[in-house]
Length: 546
Image (cartoon, rainbow, N blue to C red; front, side):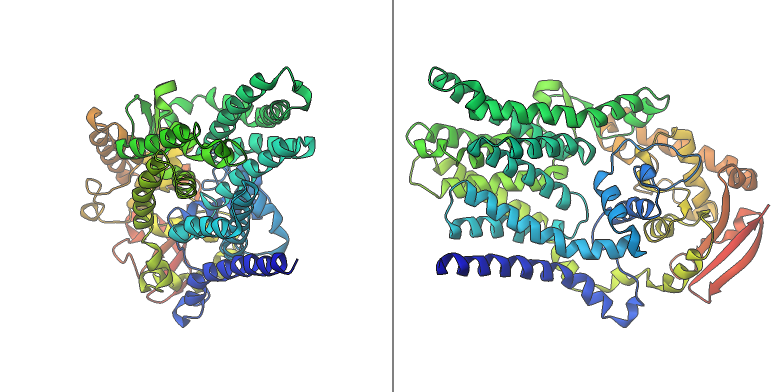
């Protein structure tokens, strides 16, 4: 009893300590007077997630899938269930999305650590090995733990789904099966790579339990078997996924869906995206399956852990089955890393010549992903470059007092406005997944570039224009040259009559970031502007007079 209490304190203390550690990067900036109370972005795509949560905080969760352009609304192709839930849960507080994320920076890592520890313990690993496994997974990916929503929160939901499935099967529990099945189906509305991994894992578990039941069916009827419980879980999963399947099907019938789909990083092919990943996980999976013959204990509860690297192998090579490549493997770095950690724990558990394969194959995988996450040091260093938007501290209350409107600014400032306020903007790179035409995307981006002098627009040199993902997978088709040509012709047309395009997209205000973009001069828009407010040398807010 005393030992159990001691371990409860240890695990609880480490969980809370992890949560505190994840607060340190933001706290370092908060304590810096230069921050002026503006919570900085700590990771990539944070402006996207903040904008989605802001939309839900504003009481408009249905539009969180595409929160940038307001009315008339163009649907987004990606679901935003986590962002909608967080926004609705914290709407009563009056907080900004950035504050919500600061709270979740503590909460989610704590629950993720406890879930991983519980998962390893249920698979009958000892306390020390379970603790080691949880820390081996979490410490190298601290950078990802400060990345809100994906893959931090979505990975937590995947692991909770699988942990509930483990309990359902071992306890023959209908209650756990219903809970796991509901989460399994709901993942369809969370994140593409999350539900794909979860369904692949459950599919492999289905095959395993089918084989086990088939061998024991004379002695065990289906209703009382683990396989029978798993069937119930899968049925509930399918039913729970149907609303999202229907929404996806409905979107696919809309006129602009195919144009949007073309812009995504999806293309036909069957070759592995990464031969190194594929070969390493093939070695892990083969070694574990071969070890089963001489180590039957791996077929007990440890089978739940054994299936993780096999599920990763299927996930990163699924194009062999359906002939479509989903880029990129980095979107699945959490399950990929968890698969490698699982293989390492099993490979180092027992002495067996076959278990040397997963042990040795997991090491470069763990080391490589840890190296890829070295950017975490910049998060904890308090780097000054993250304070490059704090001069907007005086702008935020001004924008808060305005009725919701469409605001024009340069691309970087537009991303800030989208993530920190409830106003609409014209252009951001994430609109490539909205049901908009390529022409509309070009018109919107050109409007945000028009205040630059023509020689400063740098259309040829810009990394992201209107279909960055398509450029990565279709370089041989010359799509980037077409993209540049479309942008140049559209900008030339808008240069002749900016006012008509500003009115077309309902632009009411212009924010000039004088500190970062002094050459971005709203006077080049050739429309009447009235100064609303300013902070000298930092920013100016104009109202457009049509």
